[in-house]
Image 1 (cartoon, rainbow, N blue to C red):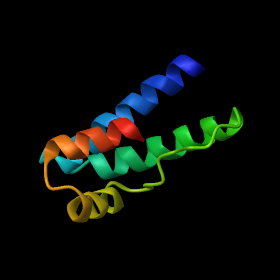
Image 2 (tube, rainbow, N blue to C red):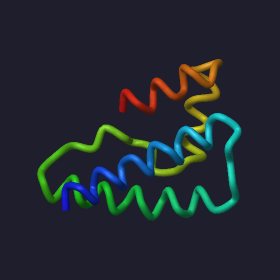
Image 3 (cartoon, rainbow, N blue to C red):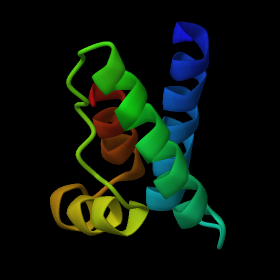
Image 4 (tube, one colour):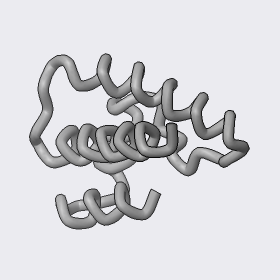
Length: 81
């Protein structure tokens, strides 16, 4: 279970980075939303607070646009959360 959770978190991170560094694809928001919910529920099951509060890639993109000017800053933020 933990191994799959880690894989899902890494996939979420990859989607987030791609979306905010011009690697966007049409299916990413739908894939992200479904995976986000899986990860959120899995973390709740093990009583761990999810540090990622971005339920959609569009919301995350809006935040990044206003906060970070470079791709490197955006990638670093994804790693942080």
